[in-house]
Length: 252
Image (cartoon, rainbow, N blue to C red; front, side):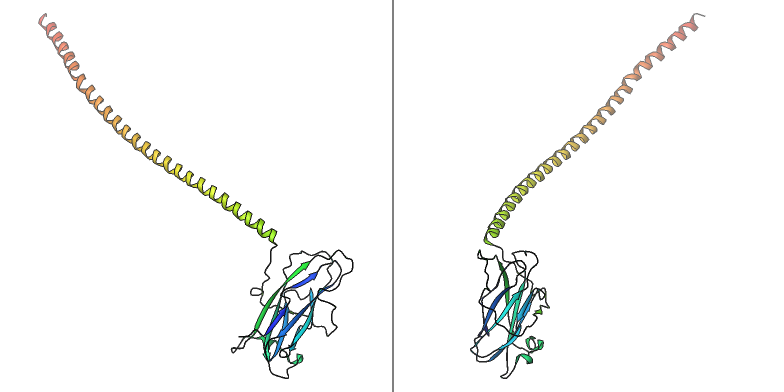
């Protein structure tokens, strides 16, 4: 299916100067032979204004709207997280801007609604003190406040990192991988050492048990031997005593 609207440029670029507004022109080209209604939404409605934020693009024609970034009191972060969404759908002939309602862009009953997300890029001002809007002089027209994106998860801003940041990030990832490999190797060595020490302890306990059993056997044998060797001595002593008593009685 042919894309309803061709949108140029592909991203919104704003020159950033403290306490000065900056504007960007967006051109919509209708690729079809039908009237196409569009609506512009943003994640930061208080920061931007759109002139107009809804409209009708005639068949095989172009339409231009202006996005203005409000003056900033302090220098913002140059990595901008803001985002725009352009919704479009075909409408009957004779439809005007006043006829455009939010329900026109509801995806129900098989209705075809196109959605194009646009990033915001902030650029530093040129060296020249005289600044002009990026895409020419702003056109005067009715002022409309942009709508707010209702689905923060689906339309969450995507951040584009500069090439230098990507290279540094890739280098940091490789360094972390290398450190993880070293730690994993050391962990494997520690596990092997623990396993070896556990086995040695088990063998030591087993040997200690065997030695105790052998010692108990030796002690038992020594005790029996003492009993056996002591009995003849007692017998001799008793015999001698009896002999002495008999001799004494014979001499009376």
